[in-house]
Length: 243
Image 1 (tube, rainbow, N blue to C red):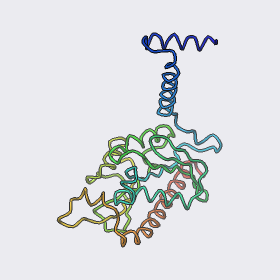
Image 2 (spheres, rainbow, N blue to C red):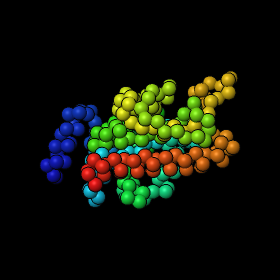
Image 3 (spheres, rainbow, N blue to C red):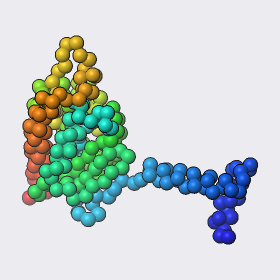
Image 4 (cartoon, rainbow, N blue to C red):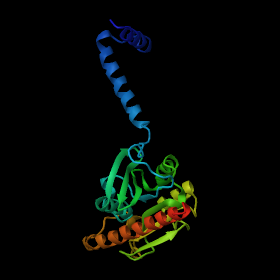
C-alpha cells in the first residue's frame, strides 16, 4: 500500500474515529469533490495576452445586467444584451468564463478591446469589474459601461462621462469601485413607468412584444457608439505615442 494511502487512512481515523473501513471510500470521495469545488472558486484570472501582445490601457466594454433566466429579457438587462450584440459583430480572439463573469479579448478592424459581462447581481457590478481593471491594467477612463436608464425614452442611447448614478444600483456599485468621474457610460433608454407602476417592477419586467421588436435598433446604436468610443481611445493612444 502506498505511503500516501496510509497517511490518508490515518487522517480519516483521527477525524472520524467511529467510521467503519467500508465507509472510508465515501468520505474520501466527498473530500475530493470538496477540494475540486474549492479549486474552481479560486481559479486565477485568465491571461488574455499570452498569444497576442497588447499595450497597457486596452479599453474595456462592460454590459450590466442580472444573471439567471428570471431576469433574461427584462428592461434592466438591456446593457447585457448590448454586449451579446457586440459579441456577434466583432472578432473574438479569445474568451473565458469564471465566477465573476464572461470575458473576451475582441477585435474590430484594427481596434482591440476587452468585452466583459458580469454574472454577479446588478448591485455587485463594481466587485466584478474592479478586479478586471486591476488585473489587466485598464484605467477607469478606458472603461465604457452599457446600462439601462429610465430617464431616457425607449430606444434612445446617450453617452455620458462620469456623473452620479441617478439611483441605478449597478452604476452606483461601479462608482464606489472606480470613482464617480472615472468611467464612461452608454445609457440605453427604457422609458419611465406609468404613474401607478413601481420603478423596481418596471425595470425587472420583461420587455413587451412591441418593445422587443424595437430593441435591435437601440442595440445597433449602442454598438456604433461603442465603436466611436474605441476609435477615440485608439486615436488618443497614438497621439500619446507620438504617431
